[in-house]
Amino acid sequence: MSLINTTPWSLVNHLNRDRNDAIRFLNGVNRAENRWWPKVDIIEEAGNFLVLLDVPGVDPQTIEVTTEANILSVSGKRDGERQGDKTNTHIHERATGEFRRSFRLPEGVDTDAITASGKHGVLEIIVPMKAEVQPRQIPVTH
Image (tube, rainbow, N blue to C red; front, side):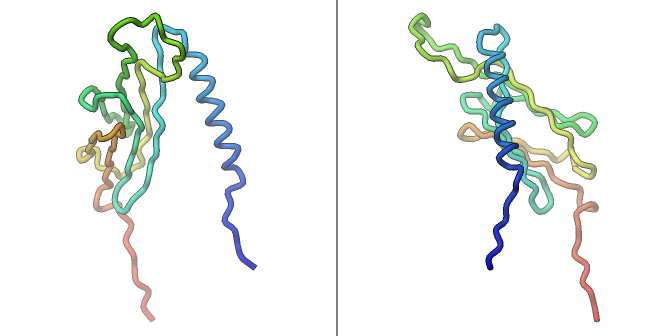
């Protein structure tokens, strides 16, 4: 007998996320103040958290990363304007405008040591944990 690792709610979570993305898209298509939400991955590594945001078309120099009261906030803007005549647009699906994402940081992070860098349309934020709160392996003796 082989065991299969399943997450029964993963399909529901994906459907909810896709539904929310569609609602956000439909609500923002014809607004003057378009807003969009970059997709994000948050990964816990040994000693830090890695936050990855998909921000294609956004100049990393224009992205603002701040922390206040254990909240990490990322904001920026993607311009959708192209040079030349704009009257011949046939399809407009790419979200443009301002974005802002905020995440509550766990206790014990070193907010003074957070770093951010952008490359190939991905913003990478490293949130290190303070040394004293990192888990440590305690050997069991016989």
